[in-house]
Every structure is written in C-alpha cells, then in structure tokens.
Length: 626
Image (tube, rainbow, N blue to C red; front, side, top):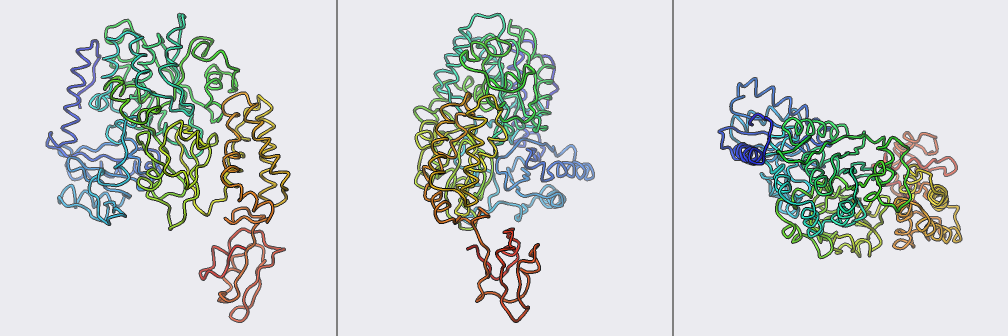
C-alpha cells in the first residue's frame, strides 16, 4: 500500500482514493503478482486463536522466504461466527473455515506452495452436500446485502489506505460541496431510520438540530450495545471503524457541529483500540481536525468508555454519562436535538445508523431507498443466535422474512428440533411464533406482531425452551440494570420478577397471573424512559402467545420443557434400566439407590436436587423428566 501523507484538498483526496483503490484491487485480483492471505480478526475468531493463526502464517512465510510473493492480513468479521476462524486466499477466493493453528502449515505446503485446495477445510453445503470453495457459494451469505457492514471482512481496519481503497471518504468529499440543508434533505429522502431500536427517521432528527441556532452543537455515536446476545455495533467498529467516523463527520457538517463523541462499552477492547487507531490515522492525514480538505469545516472526535450500564443505551442517560454524571435518563422534552450534551443541540445515532450514512451520500438517496420496504428502507444487521445452526452476524434487506432469516440464512434448528419462537429487540422486544415466520422484517411489521426491531438481536428458541423461563430471564436482566430513578421501573419490575418466580417454582395462583398482566401494563405506561416503558414487553409477549404454558405451570404445576426445576421430577424407567449404577455414581446427594446387575435403580424425590447429572449420565434413555 502507498504511504500516507497530509491530504490538503479535494483533488488530493480523490487521487489518494484512486491510488489506494488500484492497489487494493491488485491485491484482491492478483494484479501485483502476489497472493494475499486474510484472516478473520473479529472478537469471535480471535477468541478461537485467529491471532495465533496469523502469527504462524507470518512465521512460515518468513521461513519459506516468500515475503515478496505473499501478503498476510487481518480483517474484520466475516459474519459466519459459528464456522470460524476463517482464512481467505486471494486471488482464487478460496475460503477455509474452522481453521486451527495446526492447519496453517498444511495450507502453506499444500495450497500456497503446492497449488492444491485443502478439501477438508472447505465448508460443505448441507442442502446439496457440495463443498464450497468460495465465500459467495455458501448459503449463509446468499441472501445478504452488506451496506452497514461495508468493508468488514475485506479490509484491514487498522490501515487507512485499505479503507481509502474501499470508498472511505468519498461521501465526505461529495458532502463538502453541498449545503448542510442539502445533506439533511438527502438523508431525509433516503428514508433511513435509526438502527438503535426506536426507528425514528434519521433525517428528521438532523433537521431538528440544524434548525437550532447555537454556536456549539455535538454529534454523539451510541456504541453502548447492551442487549444480551447482541454484537452488531461491535463488529462494525472492529471491521471498518472509518465508515462510522465518516458518517459522524457528515452529520457534523450537516448540523454545524465541530465535535463528536463515540460512547463505546469498555468491554469491547478490540473495537476501542481499532477506533483509536482509525481516529489517529485520520488526524495524521488531515481528515480530522481543522479546515478539512482546505474548507472551513473542522471536526474532532473523542472516545468515551461506558462502564457496562444497560441504561446508558438510553440516549439521555448516555449524555449524562459523557458529562461525568450518573447514567440516568432525563425527562423529555426538551429532546437532545434541542438541548443535549452540556445543554447544546445534539444528535445521537447508533453505530449502524452512522455506518449507513456514507453509502447514502455516495450512491444517492434514491438508490438507497430502492432497498427495503415502503416504510423501512435499506438493510438491517442482526446478531442471529440461540437455537439455530448458523450463529452469526447477518445483514439483510428490510422485507426479508423471519423464515428466510431462521432457515435460509440460519440453517434451521439443530438436532431436528421444532422451532418455537424468535425473540427480537432484546429485553425491550418480544417473541414471534411459528405463525409469524413469514412476516417481512421491518419496523412496523414487528411492532404490529407484538415485538420490535430493537438494535438487532435475534435469539431463536426451540421446543426445549420454556417461555415462562425466557420472560423471567429478561426480567432478571432488567431488574439488575434498572437505574432506579422512577418507581414504576425500579419497583414494578421487581414485583414482576417475584410473580414470575412464583410461577416457575409452582406456588402461583391464577390471581397472580392477572396481577402479572395488569402490573406489566402499568410499568409500560408509567416508566420514565424507553427502557422502562419496554421492560415488560417479554412478559406481555409471552403471555399473549404462550398463555397455555403459563396455565400449565400454574394449574398443573408442570414445565413441559423441563426447565423450571421445581416443576420437574427425574424418574427411572425400570424396563429400560440396565442396573449399571452409572446414574447413582454421578448423583452428588446419593438420592439414587439400587443393586448393580440385580435391581433397577430408583430416585428418592425427597433427596433429589434436580441437578440433572443422572439424566446426562444415562446412556440408555432410562431416565426421563416427569
């Protein structure tokens, strides 16, 4: 790649983009007579030794004296997290999955030196049983469209030259020749809605801030991704932080702000480090700071680390945290666009929203608006997890159905289990059942079905999940994370959790069920902020769609999924018992008795602690949940 230097004008930027684009194209297409090895550097793959894989490639390349023939690079998340770590080799586009450190020498010897494909490292399409040599041949990727994830899995996030080669700052160059109102109008016409959960039109928020007359305004990026199972924003920041930075700069130009703050969870050290590198490199080339590209536009970025409080995902609590105060929501109005950070007009969008902005300004609002549905334009990134074969990061056009998400991309439910529900929107969302699998994904459709888009978590549950226990799990999370400022949330969610606990331990009555429903509605109506107002959604959603499960717990004292310990009993079928004593030897409280080889074993229910050790140990299916 070319060495960076100060970029002082639009012409110099365009020349830099052109030069870096040519270099990146040569690297990916083999035009520089070199092969390129890229390794996934997302958090998931790094936790599975992708850094050691990178180091081993570097060691062997040096040992084989191939430095002038091979580049090795680390990139962001490829998305298919359950199949990582990945190694992709250009220009052939060979895509190896589930690579281990011990596979590196085989790749070097057989592929890089020998010119042959390692068949055992190729992904096998479960539908056709065919081996997929290229990434785009894998069904997981075929219905996806990467806009917010632009560049992730392709460029090195710590090399600004590679970002230049993949369109970085093209949009900013265009924006600096427009008026602020023209920029806001373009975002308005694109139909972009906030990807942080509420779905408020981004352009309208920017218009409110532009219309404020003030000498100081701010742009804030909400990277406080706190939903259980969510990792969308983290992956964008790890894979292409400059796309978010450019989006914030465009927002700053549009509303007249000179400073931006990126609020990121401290639990995301890789994302934070890559953000710092990207900011430093942008400053070094003159694309952050004073008089950018010779214009009178100046913009600086600052990072603030969150300490893990879920409530700081609420925008006004986030502002308090940046100001050094306790993260608690503020009453609204005034809204942040009027009086936000330090009382100044402030726009707050999340990571994914800002990552969409450069694309919109590059291709135009009309092109962006062609993607998606009538009221929800563009794509949405989901962290697809739970009881699904293909766990990972997914970006699909709005209007894609839940069935396509779960089955075509997610690969369906493991072990031939039946689909039961998908929870969208995290603790603030709700569950959708098999009857709603053909629902097109957009903001309005999900709300109409009793859930919400949220920031993009999508947790799949199968027949072995207890939906009462699912509601209890989310309420435990909410109770732990409530800031305590308003009593409906502080006290109400605690009472809801107590009622759910009574239901799961078999002591609840039908009157408790009515209390649960009425109190959920009161918490929803009376809480101060959006988090409190949606805290009861998992309860209301499961009550609406799985009321029979609640009734079974209360009336019959049974948990058919076998999850709620107080409502299950482990029993031994004497006809199937092999009298081997394995279950007895695994029991930690000596609740199982019998005679080896002579008498079937029996569980003493008064001693059993329902740990499930016997159930897991039995190889003959003799132990069952009754």
